Image 1 (spheres, rainbow, N blue to C red):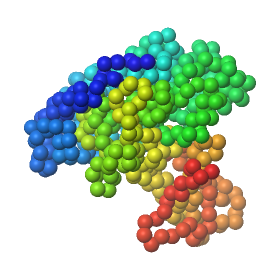
Image 2: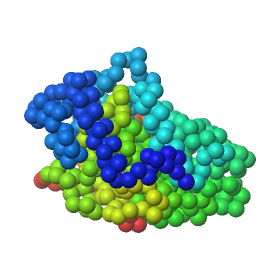
Image 3: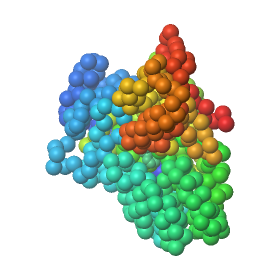
Image 4: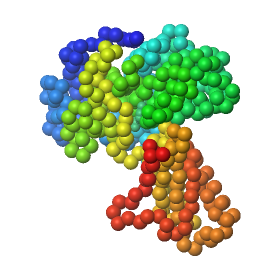
Length: 434
Ligand code: DLL
């Protein structure tokens, strides 16, 4: 079921014509309004007038996360303050966050994107949408909320947490669609079962629109079985908009990009050259309709590929495969973005331990588990159990406060952690192996 059939099923030539027109306007717009882009275009020796075909996009410079951080807070905004309706920030980053602004028009465009995916899940007017993504600076909650309202749903703004209540209201209000991270969907399902419900029979769920983190096939199957509904993988990132940039349709064979609003490229993360169709590389986005925080060739660091061929649903937006990983070292642990350096920062405040550490990632019942292994300094009384326990619990607390995730801490004896002559191997990612 389409939401904006004309845009979603536009023929490729028509769509590409629209993209070119929008790209030309965008190039002029950012050149005139954002000093960063004027400088970057000048440096690359390109002017907005040089964009005469879609393939000219590759003449334009890339934008990276650091550019957004350097522009903190508002230097990348293309509109005056009085036209900004909302501000979000990227989650869980080290140092300065990247700030994204939205005009009223930007918010409407975003809602339209999300609404498309609610309709693709065969929901809309009359459906109850339970939003269990976090509300706040994170784009999940408000993005799903506004999309649900415009799609005609009755929106239940639960946010994350309070799982017993999520379960009770899901049953009592006959929720049709659940929107949250895949890990949280599983927590909700397990809580429901613990409370004595048979969610697949007792509840009214038709669809779960899950994203913000990778979801394995196994996890997806488990959620679908436990909750008795279809899972739709939804992708997005705050810098580019928020949830809804791409999502699965009813055929669940890749995520359609809203290509009337974004141009996607997949490039080799090292050479930055486009990879052949169907091959994996880094996803890059150019925003076509954003007024406040437009972006040219933004490097997402997410690794995926275009799925060749047409989709049976009739939507003409190309499909990307589910996100396979990231080209930088950002970890996504239970939906929270974490950088290894954040662990280092926390342990640096404990004189009892050295700066040698390793992060071991595993999965248990499809949920990410993270263990920090850290070494004591050589004069630490390793056999005094009370001291060891107290240190372990203090580090655990500090990590929870800083990273917003629960981390198991294993304190090991001096010189136990692998040393390296080259780059240290900080992350041992065993997810998917157990
Ligand atoms: O996670 C926006 C979002 C909210 C998307 C709700 C979907 C649902 P950020 O916090 O900026 O924004 O994190 C963006 O999360 O670059 C990916 O690495 C990862 N990510 C987002 N969706 C998916 C997905 C939101 N479906 C970063 N599969 C992105 C895998 C995803 N990874």
